[in-house]
Amino acid sequence: MTDTDARRALLEQLTDDLLAANPRGRIIVAIDGVDGAGKTVFADAWRDVLRERGAHVVRASIDGFLRPRAERYVRGRDSAEGYYRDSHDLDALRASLVDPFRSGADSVALQVHDPATDRSLEVRERGIPHHAYLLFDGIFSLRPETRGLWHRSVWLDVPPEVQRERLLARDGEGSIRARYTEGQALYQREARPRRAATIIVDNADAAHPRQLFDDFC
Image 1 (cartoon, rainbow, N blue to C red):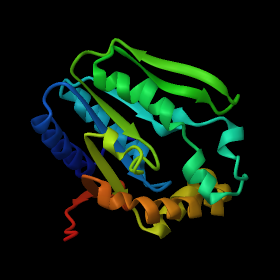
Image 2: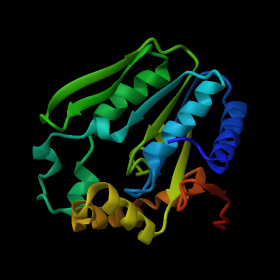
Image 3: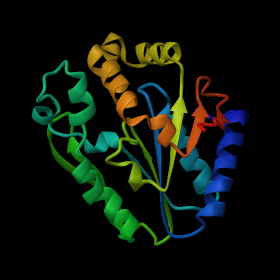
Image 4: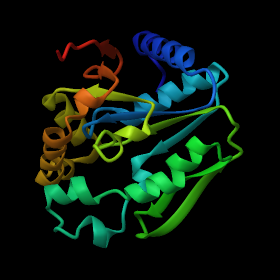
């Protein structure tokens, strides 16, 4: 998928702002949004722009830090609360990825569990220089337990009808089960991630995203 001019322009502007404010050191940016918001595509495109500018970029996702099935479904396979509270191993995320990256380690774990086999699996990136950027995408990234891990954060806004259309096209009816939709609603009620984000992007049209500047006062 190639960038449109509109998306490219936004990513260039975000890159300008990021590099100007954080030219050196280890910087972490999280990209959050509901399922179907376009987090992975957005993060991958931003990675490419940063790399063109000469930055070393590590790409990671919350999907690399799933808990074993027995823990993910301890409240039941249909539990919305379980989807929000039990899906991800936040301790492993900190210990294996975030803390080593922030401390300047030259190697970090990008994945700690294989959902296909339901077994531990460590996938690492090595040779990370002292000055580097970590682009992290994933649902629930702006929950209270993790929002302090990121130097910057992006919330991708999409209306419900666009989310539904994308999910049905991508994953079928299973992706709009109550476990997922109600779990995300619980997250938004409790964590208010849109307000916690430092950058809000309207991604209803992924080819023409635009930054929003909302006044919450």
